[in-house]
Image: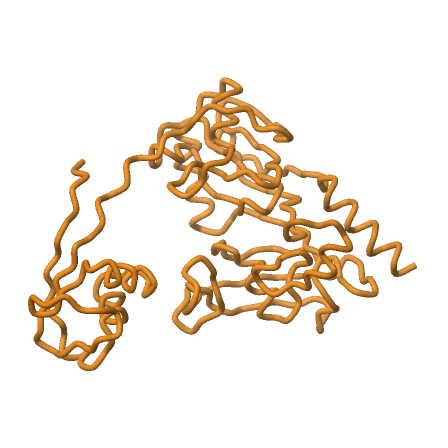
Amino acid sequence: MSTLPETRTLPVPDGLEGERVDAALARMLGFSRTKAAELAAAGKVRLDGAEVGKSERVTGGSWLEVEMPAPAAPVQIVAEPVEGMVIVHDDDDLVVVSKPVGVAAHPSPGWRGTTVMGGLAAAGYRISTSGAAERQGVVHRLDVGTSGLMVVAKSERAYSHLKQQFRERTVEKRYHALVQGHPDPMSGTIDAPIGRHPNHDWKWAVTAEGKPSVTHYDLIEAFRAASLLDIKLETGRTHQIRVHMSAHRHPCVGDLTYGADPTLAARLKLERQWLHAVRLGITHPGDGQWVEFASEYPEDLRHALETVREDSA
């Protein structure tokens, strides 16, 4: 694969007449407006042969010339033990782990910490070769700041079978979340599309242009300042629970990215969102039987929960 920059020349459609350069580029190339603005700021964008900034306006029929950044080198899995990662289940087809907080599911260009894939490699697990090189065998992911259950395919048939289950939404994914305040109603469904945040490329938001996203929640226990919820995902968008609960005005406790109260997080000594993948149910790709796995709360979440419970006594 070439690692040289690529220059692309694109005609501006009449429908983008009068748009800013960064907005037009984002629409034409399918990436974020922030990235388009960065390219313009770096002198990588020309309009009809003349270098332009991000805020200049385009005209229909003109030509935008963009010097695209060179493709990143493939990310490699580094075998490195993961402290606190628990093997919940292991057989010829799959391995189920309880992922600790602060660990990514697989390597990525912007991540330099430990990963589930690196931890499995260090422990000598042979994983399916299906999927991209840096995430072979990975059929779903958890945020770095979210702990709990993940299943990884070990055989090729398991990878295909599990991907299909996630695609057809027959997998049961259950989370427990401690959220601020008291949702009304106490049990309900949040059906709101999720897409990239319009102003922050690293965040997600409820937006009309987003993908369909459905979250079901039920109250487990109510406290003075917070509520413990059982959450079932019907879809699996990035940051779905965090975005939906924040949009519902009840962000996960400790989730400063999505509007949680930093004072409460500090009092609970919580350095991440209170969110844990507690149960996972799948049809086993080997014998077709339904199997379920469970994961207990890690120490930081237990401490925070005990504190809010004591405060409510």
